[in-house]
Image (tube, rainbow, N blue to C red; front, top):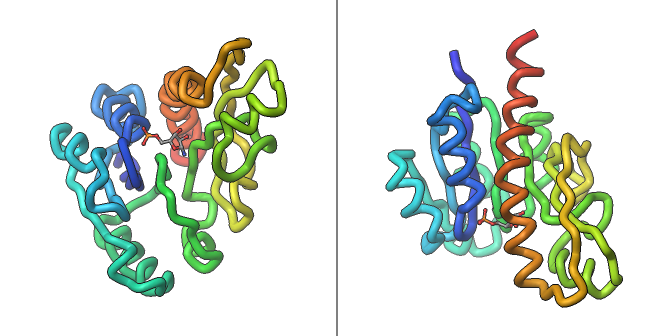
Length: 194
Ligand code: GRF
């Protein structure tokens, strides 16, 4: 049986689209079971529907800051969908220790920097401000330490002298799409094909 993947998004969902396309074309031996957004207005929800992937929006705002209740709803959805692996793809909520512990070694994330550099936000501007010549993206296992879990793979991108955060984000995003599919495929092969 193919592992069932949940992809969690908050925005445009280009990484989600790339993962779904890789699964649908059998470049990843897995099923895109559901796309979940904490933002009901995320553009990625429509893109997922157009790809015939079921979607659910769980608006964190209606939980009035009660993260436990939000995560309980999220967890119930994931259990109901018998999810094997969670891929965070531009999902802008921090998950609690307790949630992550329940999905130990089953949550991946894509981060737009060469970790351990530039954990957190505004990674591209920080790389430019530091006069870095190279940046990139990383796929890592999600642990309780923000952007701190085991790095499974990285891709680098050159930073040119006239780079802006916007142009850099566009260049890195292209590499994110390639990297995430490759690493998810490797991860599944390591776990499910022994
Ligand atoms: C990507 O740069 C990802 O690395 C970061 O958020 C962005 C999401 O882009 N965590 P998209 O929604 O996949 O287009």
